[in-house]
Length: 171
Image (cartoon, rainbow, N blue to C red; front, side, top):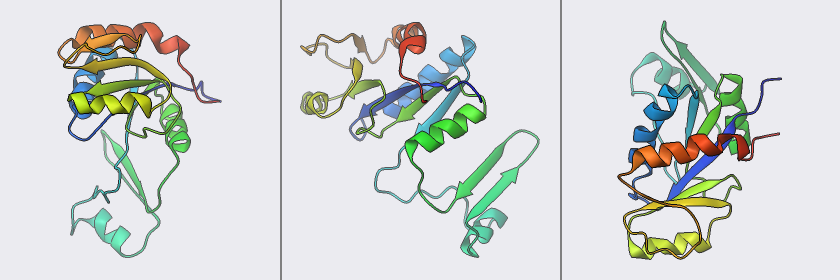
């Protein structure tokens, strides 16, 4: 069996900067030799992966439960059902991910960095579990947790690299 990856959730309210943070963090971690997988939670929306009219879209519209497409450089599989986070993490582990960064899934129990953009976002700190740090625009948080300025991506990346081995990994 493949060694389980370490998991870090990036949580925050809508438009708090989660995706921007991840897109800056990923290349730094990959350059450091960590193979990164990413899972995005689409809370309440019905995302559309395919483009209407394309072959894979037409297969799904025809009722296929699973549709895969592959090329010389990438592969995608679309399932017509939701999946548990643990299943998605295992799939990324099977594909070689050493670290899985999860955007969202606030109620899951993995280690989390909370993004706080506005003062009212601090409510999040009382809702989520397993917080290991805060990333934001103001360091006025009295949580006893490491704080990182949103623009200090290098320190966030160092924090992640240093702690990869101590975070909860899937069993």
